[in-house]
Length: 80
Image (cartoon, rainbow, N blue to C red; front, side):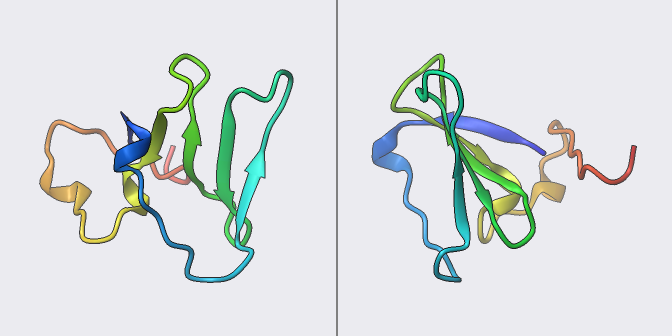
């Protein structure tokens, strides 16, 4: 998984399947963790350290090829 932090004005998302985006919150509920209910992948979250800003899983972006960025390590969660 590779991610980066963006401001709320720049976060635009669409859900291809109704009700497939889940939300997980814990403790003080400042951080909001969104995930796909179908496959379980982390999609994005509202950060605890920068409330109102989001970390986005780059692997969830359309038309974004992680293979072309050589300095970013990709972790797929399967190949350890």
